[in-house]
Image (cartoon, rainbow, N blue to C red):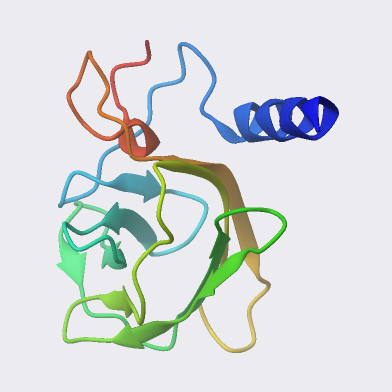
Length: 143
């Protein structure tokens, strides 16, 4: 059991942003994913639902078009796969995150139906950063 816990901790820490790495923030204060065009913000709402907001080059929100996203998170032994519904300005998860405060997250984004899937991995840590006061998954202070 100790070996499993150690493996999970080491694996989860590999997904966290590196010390000194400063992440960009999106319009809602979430983590900005810059590997896509348009860029997209990963944000956890107060009711624990993941919300994606696409942004233009100036950082202004734009309506989602044909993008599709899946998120896999939670316990590795029983992962939760989130699916999303398009709203006027976002893609919003159909269900809240599982209970707890930190899990590895795998985000798969297709900008168009014919595009290559872009995969982002990080620790979805909801604890508050002592430096920037944002959730750790969206920390911008490079502590």
